[in-house]
Each structure stands twice: as structure tokens, then as C-alpha cells.
Amino acid sequence: MDTNEGARISAGLIKQIVSRVENLEEQKAQIMQDISDVFREAKSEGLDVPVLKQLIRLRKKKKEQVAEEEELLDIYRRALEQ
Image (cartoon, rainbow, N blue to C red; front, side, top):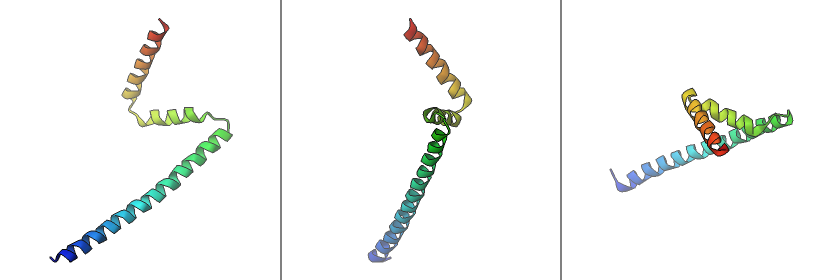
């Protein structure tokens, strides 16, 4: 295989990868805009957006992990009250 041929193959692969990533970045930007729109709608309906975001974060975690974090939070709160 000629060095130039290897460079052409690599350049083609690089262009393809870069193009795919750029396309995904555009899709990601659109999705982020869509999410912002939903939160704006929620706010206009009187919902508390930071609480909704916290709820969404909690739903991503395992129940055991949430329970452990809540227990630690309670322990820390009680420590501050002393």
C-alpha cells in the first residue's frame, strides 16, 4: 500500500467521522432547545422548573442510591441542627 493511498483512506475516514460528529452535535443542540422549550412551558403552567430537574435526576438513579443519599442528607441536616 502506497503512503499516499493510506493517507487518502485515513483522510476519508477522518472526514467521515468529523461529519458524523458534527451532525450529532447539531442534533444535540436541537434536542437541548426542545428540552428548554418544555421547561419554559412547564414554568408557564406554574411548575417549579428546578424541582422538575431534580426529579428527573432522581429518576435516573437506582432506588437504593436515592434512599442512601436521602439518608445521608437527613443525617447531615440533623448534625447541623445540634
